[in-house]
Image (cartoon, rainbow, N blue to C red):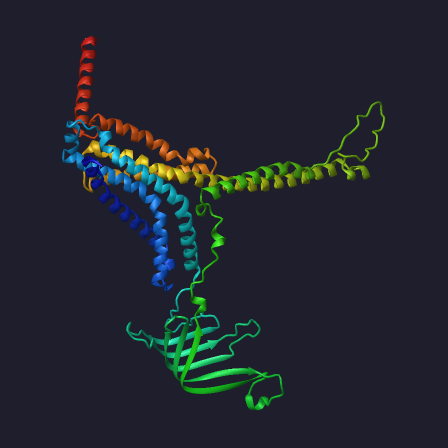
Length: 501
């Protein structure tokens, strides 16, 4: 490796990894802001939250790589141009394309890595990340008792406290509660009503070390229980009909409740594997072929199935007052038409009913086939994106390196602004192309490759301008051109005036 290659590569890797880390962080913050309501009060442990961030950080890598390559290559050649190192290289007979060669190799390697990442890692990360996110969204909120309000999210219990005193973080005895009322409900679905009521002057609430059980340690209270008794009882002594009430007083009583319903229950990940984002290229190709075959078979079956909505009747022409011959049953003759003579009104009603049935049948089948076709387009689109996201890295390198050599500005000022503009342009074109492809407005390959089709010629044009030391972004060039245009206009108007005179 020559010194020029070491110089260029040394200037590239720092901004590349910094930009990659910043973009991943920004996308993770976007995720947190979007799902912040789902995370609040779910009492997630750090391991679960860390796994979620890790999976979604992996998902942002394919999106972050083009921007990182664009910005780092732009800054690399911008710095070389700003400190006249590019000028020195050209004076020594080294062309711009030779100076770009090490980064060109790096861009190809990053593109290959991006393809492997999209095909192998992204489907796995999508499956793990979105299944875990679904489990978090469907998990119940952590136990949060409010003063004077019954809490009913704990299965089998209704709990109310008059006053709640929050315990210190270092305390292991839990929150101090005043004036507790606890109703125990039957959970077997057979009995109804409140069969047990616990009243306590005070108590404490805490969980065990494994956060498996919720413990209420109650002080100075009573436990009221009702027992159903089918045998003969002295109702006069109990004051009830159909049961007995028993009151137990206590000074210290522990109520242990399982918190299994509040735990994070993992859903079977196989339920999420149908999504196209969770398939590699081979799986997408197989599923696309199967869907196309199913679509063709369904389309062909519509015509044959629709024949049941038609009746066939042939009339013989009446010549010289002769009566028409009776219709005989046959392969194409509805048997009902040969058994009874129908009036024109009845035939019109029958035709209208069958037309309505046929319209409903056709409408439902058109909608069904459209959905099948859109599913095929989605899988085809995702197959193309395995390649388009990789090629976009190479396209962004062409634009970034050429722009850096033209503007000759390094740092995080102008290069960041230009990189964001091109990245937003790439992102918008990708979204528009995907939408048109999914809706069937354009051919799927055209929609998938739209961003690269538009930006690749831009990269080649900028490369050609950079090789010829173009002053494309020099404002003095445009000021001089504007002055020349005004001078030409004034001369033309003066010549026209003299000609008129």
